[in-house]
Amino acid sequence: MKKSIFITLFTIGLLYYQACDLGPCCNHDSPACPCFVSNTNPGAWDPSGTWIQDVANQTLGTRESCEPNGGQPYYQMVLGMNSPEHANIAACLLDRFDEAFDSTWDRSPWCSEAVSYWHREAEIPYETGYRNSKWHLDWNLIGSKSIRNFYQAEEETGGRGRWIDVAEMTPYDFRPGINAPVPGAYMRITYYNNSVDTFGSQNSHSLMVDSMTVYQDITGRVHRVRARFLEGNSGNRVTNSRIIDSLFAFTPGGTRFFSSTRKIYGFGIDLDQYGYPIYDPGRIDTVFVDPPLAPVTWRRVNIRRSHEEIYHASKLKELITYIKLISSGPKVTATVGNFVEKGIPDGHHINWIIPVNLVKQSPSPLAINFDLLDEHPIPIRGLTLDWSNAYVPTGYHVFWAGKDKKFREAKVPQITLDGLKSSPTMGIPVPVNFGNGMEKVRYIKIVFPQNAIRKDAVLSGIHFKYNWGPDDDAEEHPLPKKKKLKP
Image (cartoon, rainbow, N blue to C red; front, side):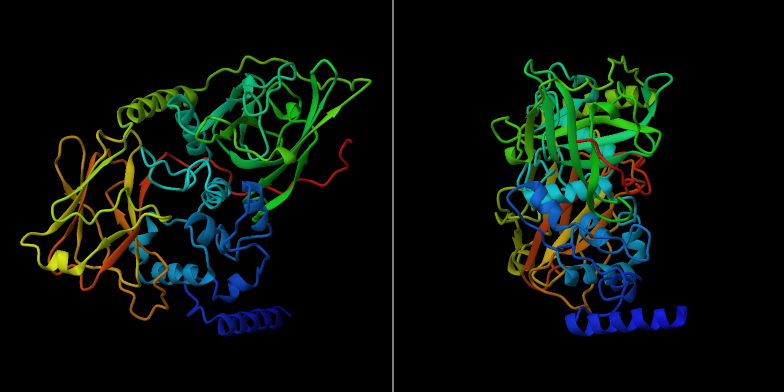
């Protein structure tokens, strides 16, 4: 029986490969592999929509392959590939240059990465999602702690985010987008010790509010907030089946827990350029109750700060100081010519075109210099350079330094596309590793000797890979248990 099932899955995979012409099966679970196809799902590879929930809902059903934290969620929501063809190229690069990619392309719980991906595709709060060209040069935030840090730092520096601590939420003064969530809001849940009223930092999970119903009486007091959620890594897939009948019940002041140990930690609100919350008003309903419902069981709690929270507060202070210092963003200069377009390549609409003649005819190597204006308070593990135009240069060098200006050479793998199916529209990723992942970086330079480029090169994206600390997200968040909900 098992043998026949395997043969059937292999046949399906072979037919899929022949139909789509993706290339070889690479990295165990790429889109051309039976392991991937055995988990065929309706999730869109290139979602779009008016609101972030429209984007997220198009990815519903996207699920892992036979590899833990693998399959479409890995290639799409962790690595950022928007087509099975591009994902298969990435998979084959991983196979061929596994040592170069292993340290930066590891598989991990992907609930926070799903939220990051939805923000990138919805182009909020910035055009490239969480990528803020002033201080955070990557669309992906690894782990729920980093998303929390993003919203807190944005709020404190006048950016496009607001963090709502769960202690701010009260049924007596419920203002969506100000001190309470809105549809589209990010929500973090994490371990809570009820006996000492303290949050921990293990088994965290990232969710996004899909829709809300607010029940209130004529005095304005909120009796209940019913909400539906979108989430990745829920039963190893993207789901929207989690509905809770009272947000307050899952706060420290309420009586209920997620998975017996976790409560709501807080919410992240996306803001537009004028500071107003970004959300679809059609996804929030207000129901007036008369006579009033019994108020939700809830109490004010004086939440104590754990050692982890005290450490986080000090790191956040450093980050805020840095963001205020570099209000104009990093400085980028080149030693030869004036080919650099405004802004750093972002994988969205800013590219750098490096003409072959400019490099070959230069009497000295072309050097592109980055000055982050101070050491970034978040250690930088390295970069990912996305090369388009179906061409990846080789023979160039990348150097980095702290404020001491003692430059050290990074590891740049010599990526070749021989034998790989490619397209001019696809960014071929090249990982550049700086060191042990704890490097404090201020200066970076990319140097192109005269023989480093054989034809015009297009650098479509430069992504800074930050080290936000250990990922405390739960390995797998279980699907919610089905139960009859209160009206």
